[in-house]
Image 1: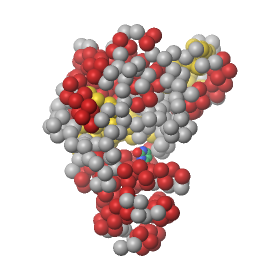
Image 2: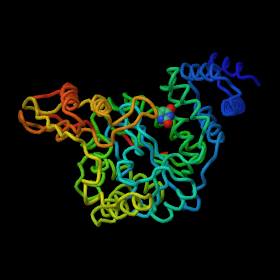
Image 3: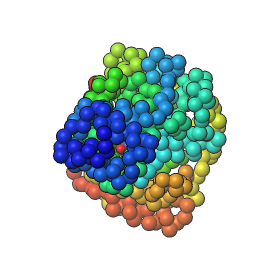
Image 4: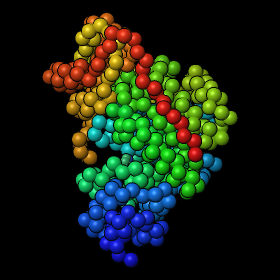
Length: 435
Ligand code: URA
């Protein structure tokens, strides 16, 4: 078999066999297929697609390219969650202790933010002492003791995806549904998940900006799960405006804590109940969505979810007093309040602009490896559908100097559209696809 023939076959719109996909991915993993051939192949896949069987074969070939984690000893069924990324998406931080308090342990490997989309590891590092770099033994020990662990990738999981993704990034071949679906699924399967809830974001602040594309990606991932024996539920959720009110690392952790204390923003709490509820359903820990929701709401109301959050933070070396004393978080030097420039109803609030402004303030990174400022960000006081009078508080900018705050305010004010008539907020959830 030769890589060039596999590229030609895909160029000519033919389906690759299981053996051809395995050969190509093994060659890529061992560095036997050079970058230019991998890039040509990725472009052929982007242009001509892959059918569902090829996509599942690609996923499993990438799983086999490295180590796989066995979480059988952690729980009879380990359910993971994954978000395709958005602005203000701190769901993992609140949902993981909520489901753990309801009896479902979570062992999760998360990533860092890139571009306008934040990352769970960066957010967690705003908790003093929290250690994201655990080896496999400690990773397993933490989940056994606390019922929750969230750390950076420890094992060499799906290394073929790492190499392929780096090349896709610089050859304009990221936006391919089979390549994205197999990339996400290979990492989740290699990290030991028996089942998973995929939160596929759609809108201005998401990877997928149309519902049609998001649905296609979600269906492809559910289909991969079915073909390889993993139960997958995909939630299509809105990302036209940020989720919740806070955007920025420490600010988002504070909002997750407020939510566990029963005083988080309504949209974010609702989203946590939905994602966590689907996790409980997959694990067989709830009869139906309504029962799952009640179990999670009870875990918040009783304080059990907050207790679980504290136990988790302690087990990873962090300071649990952050749940009582926000002064322990990194704080920005300037907090600049921006009033509503006019009276009316907020008709649009561009999530991507909010995400990019928070990156401009220092909360995110333009390139992998750049440092991030954990303190800065944006706190919204109102969202789409809210009516404000001119001069009422609209948002607060947390910046390290007045110039940054002024530049951010100018940019953010341009991200709003206003209406005189009342209007409904955009849907939080478009659909739930259960495999
Ligand atoms: N996230 C991934 O993990 N892979 C992709 O290809 C795109 C987003």
